[in-house]
Image 1 (cartoon, rainbow, N blue to C red):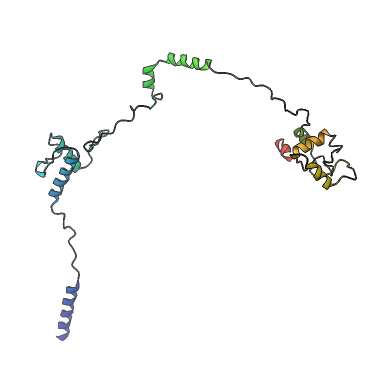
Image 2: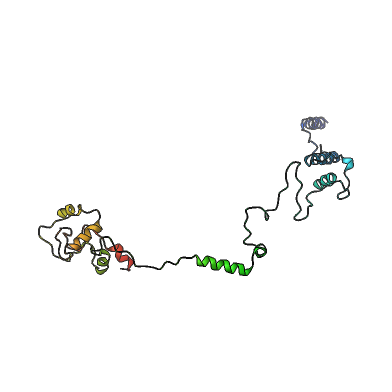
Length: 230
């Protein structure tokens, strides 16, 4: 008996400590008032007199624009395709883009055909063609230093690697003297032109090719050979 009393007391204490679960439907019982307030708000935004809930008929059953607009808002989006949506008071309705100023109608056959005929287009094309200026190709202008040797042609005529001696040089020729002589030229291309103009590759009067490979001042023919697939 004592155990039964203790168990009952424990159940009562547990029930007293349990947090009550709130009603999830509280606050949604007066849905008619919510509809009336929403219709009244939408009517004010559209610049129409306020509409009460008693004035709201069934959807599509009133001739009053304000009432019809409020009813359509409550019933959800039912606008037909292409119909403009209602706007607030003072806000201009959006306009179609197709007729806006500044947009070209050249891609519209109907618009263009209304302005001119096919014969007009043909005449316009002929007028435009008459204004074309045909420039005939001419020879390339000569190089300012046309008397200088053509190092490109020389590169394509050779096939030996850089550093491979092919021509005899003086016993007094050295790499140090070659570097000093090469410093007189802005680029290795200029040095190679001077080397060929001075009798190269067989002769090296300016001391620009001490190793006798036919290439002065570290000039490399590889980029020119690459064009011809060497």
